[in-house]
Image 1 (tube, rainbow, N blue to C red):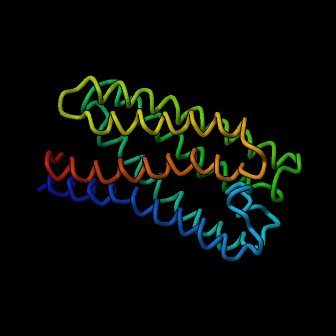
Image 2: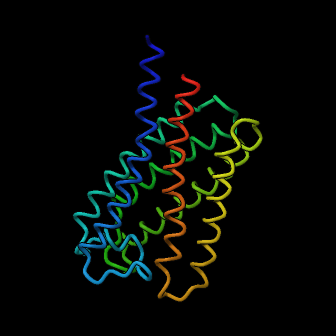
Image 3: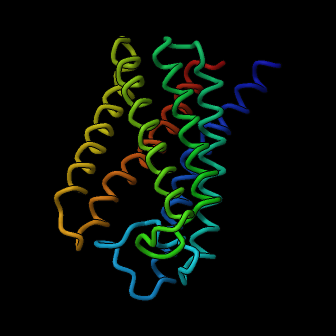
Length: 214
């Protein structure tokens, strides 16, 4: 009876990841609608939730909901897989959990002061949060890639982890070489790859629990 209750809780938690993905893209889509003249090719996603943004209220609301669901998923992911597959995967789940928490609290408390970069304390903290999120994301992907690929039955999440890591590297390179007119496009390669990766992990965890249980 206790085991069945745990399975149900973890299955519900696992779906929080994909729900979060839906709210993330709602924040981007609706934010763009309410931000007159917003150009996704050149502007950063963070412009949508900037303090003086015309789309701040709607975009920040959906972003906040996205953060809550993503943190709930990452915590459940960590608790469920801690010590389950191997140490590398366990470390990866912990780092991923830390990353989502930093992202949620950091970007909630430190949105950009205005579109672009005004150089205020708030903007500097926003950049600091971004750097921390990127670092924890990269390290967690490395641990996931190693941990999953050394197993016989869990190659799929390992391959997805490597592909996401590759997209992050591609996005980072493009951010340094593309003209400013395409900054937003390069940034989206980075951000969307991690958001979609979270959704894939969410669905994979749900399927794993269905097949394995607690």
